[in-house]
Length: 169
Image 1 (tube, one colour):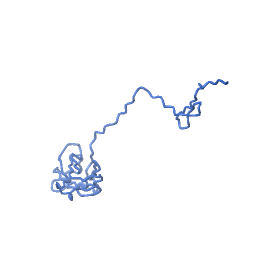
Image 2: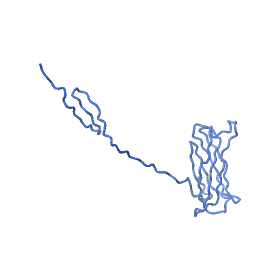
Image 3: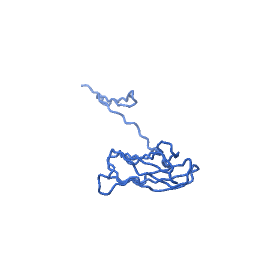
Image 4: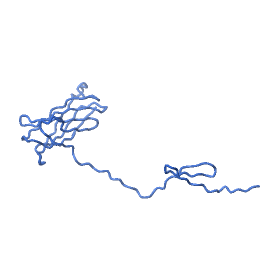
């Protein structure tokens, strides 16, 4: 009778992609789990504290600013000055899967040195309650209400705008 030892050592081999496998004496294999360290690494995510803003040049013919919130894009168009007010047209694109019933923007206008001239909350889209045909439907585009802000005339302003309220249904 032959006596054989079944305790033959297994062999660890590193593959070309860097993984390691253990080859067993019974012609089986298994992946070797990488050793994990006991210390944890904390990754800090930077906090962006700046608000969306832009420099307004009157009658430039170019859109002033674009805001996005929950799949709704709002473009504030080219600014003009009429009757003592800065006039900002708006356009809304609803790319979400819900109908939009109300959009409010918080608008701040500053002079070129950063001094606040005006601040206001403006509703640029308001549908009529329980009248579905007035809702801004998904995948549609509409003109929003024109924003008018009373300020002294200047060549340029700084605009800070945020979506303060967005209601969908």
